[in-house]
Structure formats: C-alpha cells, structure tokens
Image (cartoon, rainbow, N blue to C red):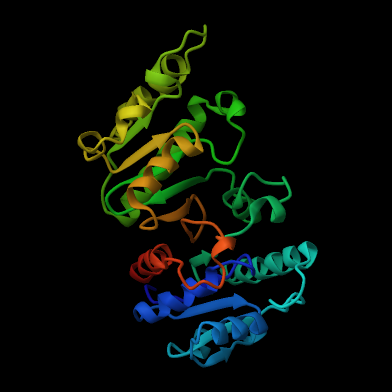
Length: 321
C-alpha cells in the first residue's frame, strides 16, 4: 500500500505551483508514482518556459489503472482550460477549471484509487466566493466530513488552530469545549497513527496572558476545563499558556504540537520559525490531504525563484506513508 499513487491537483493555474512541481521532480525520485491533474496545454507551456524536459504520459481517466503510470514521465490527466497563459484571465473559466480538477481527484479517492492527495495553492477569495472559509472546509464538505482540523506540520513542531479562516471578531463566539475536544483528539490520533506515539500538546489561551477584564474569561471558563477533561482521558496536554512566550525555544521544545485559538496566533510563529519547511495537513479525512504551506505567490510567477521545499516535504511524507 505504501507505493499507492500520489494524486496532485495543480490548483490555481496562474501561480508558481508548476514551477515548484518541476523543481520537486528534479530534486529526487519518489517511490510512489505521481499523477498530475491539470491542463495539458498549460503544463506544456510551463515546461517550455522553465526548460523542463520530460515525457508526458497521458492517462485515460475512464480506464485508469496504476499499471498505466510511468515513473520516468509526468503522468497526466488532462482537464481542459480555455484560458491559456497568453490570454486574458477570466475568473469563471479559472474557477471551473479548478473545480473540475478537484472533482477528478476526489472521484479517484472515492473509487479507492489512492489515499494520497496534494493540491496546489488557490486564490481562495475568488474560488470559494465566501461559501467556505478555506480549502480545508471545502474539501471536508466534499466528503461530508464534519469533524476536521488544519495542522501545519513540521517534524520538530506542529501547530493547529481551533478556528481557521474566520474574522477575528468571531473567534470568541466559536470556541467551545466541544470544538477543543474535537481538534485535540484529531491531532492525538494523527500522531498515534503516523508517529507511533501520543503527541505532547500545549494549548494557548485566547486572551493576552490568559487574562480578561470581561465577565467571561474564556481561558478560565472554557479552555482550562477542556484541558483538564482531555488530560483525564490520557491526552498529553497542558495549558492554557500565554501565546506571547510559548514559541520561545525553551518552551516550544517541550512539545510536539501547539494548539492555538485562531489562525494567525499559531501560523505566524510557525512560518517565522520554519518558513517553507512545513506542510498543511487536513486531519479527519478518510485520506491524507496535504497542501504546500504557501499561497499562489502570483508576484513571483515566471521568475524561477520560488522555493519547492514545502512541496518536497509533502511528497516525502506521502512517499513514506
């Protein structure tokens, strides 16, 4: 099972993803075969642009078999895209293309062709159109999954926000003991399955120094009781800790995962510490979904300066599991 095909949905067509994809293939060979889902025209244009020479092995989706894959070629399922890189971008065409690519990838997963899934970055506000806070929620919805979490994973330290892509003013309204139990248990299950151990987890408070002048102090009324209950059930968790000092080396080195209350509370420090040496894993899905931990980086398109490290880490993780 370990060599099951890695499905890659290219994501935003006007991004640096194909550049870093080429660089990832140049970096090393992977044991697992790779199946790319994107536009053949777009792929060939980018290959020529970056002088990346490799045979394209066109895969018939209707009769797909892993035996059709060739590790020496780019295995491709072609999804038509009317906006080639020389034409004026049309958002409706782009969104249809992205959705069609994801639908092909999801269908392969649902048919048990693979449990390994990577997608390139998306311009979320244009593609999701406020229907979902982020791609994590979009993908979970496509598989009817209600309990899920976003974890930014690095082998030395990972982080997980209780809330994801929501306005900061709404964070305190959404945090509940139930939601904390849900996210923490998903993190704990991931570490037991893929790392063979229970994670040492630190949980952050919501308020500065875990204190509040309001009548409702979420740290005392919600977070601390949740930690106590989880600890009673065997989870290696402690807190709440003040966010302003938790990422100091002497503090973070004691833990495998730091769980925060909102997106930037934990993603800002983890990206500062590790930059591109981390991957975004969606927990709770019936397959492993990873995306490189960066955006489309539209300003860098065509400059051949984008780092492939996060995609390499994603491929390495799936190659081993």
